[in-house]
Amino acid sequence: MDLLTLADYAGTCAFAISGTLAASEKKLDLFGASFIGFVTAVGGGSLRDLLLGNTPVVWIRGMDYFILIMASLLFTFLFYRYIIKLKQTLFLFDTIGIGAFTIIGIEKALSFGINEPLAMVMGLSTAVVGGVIRDTLCNDVPLIFHKEIYATACIAGGTIYLLLTHLGADTFFSQITTMLSIIAIRLVAIKFNLSLPKITR
Image (cartoon, rainbow, N blue to C red; front, side, top):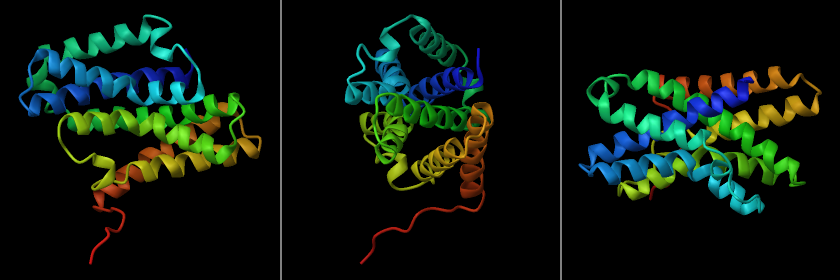
């Protein structure tokens, strides 16, 4: 199993757990929490594949994603009181996930002949749409629109990935550098409470 696939699986699990936790905070029932956890995990990749005409979408083609998500949901339900204390660990997996999703989205779009700026949009969509769906269904303003340096980190990481690809860098080096860049940007932004300027009167 290569680095990107491993990070993709880790991110999928983290997204499923984060969706379930968000739903539990809204006091949703078991089905509601499961549904939100599931769509959080697959939302970005599903939208990407639908926009690219790459159907059936990736998680329907085999049982691996379905099993991972179901296991993550069950794990969350059984060990909720312990998981809720592991926010830093979940943050790390979530950030690894968005790094992997950004790269996967870009590579998938490029393989379909999409030009690089739009491939970047596909990478960003893959990384953040699941979280947007999660927050919207939980009746919250999506996190990426008002609080954290999240989408910006994906854009920066995607830019680094495309630049390294143009320079002929090794694939593994490009992938690990991209993911580490996204992790570093998010860590620095949270440590120093950085965010994009808001529109004010």
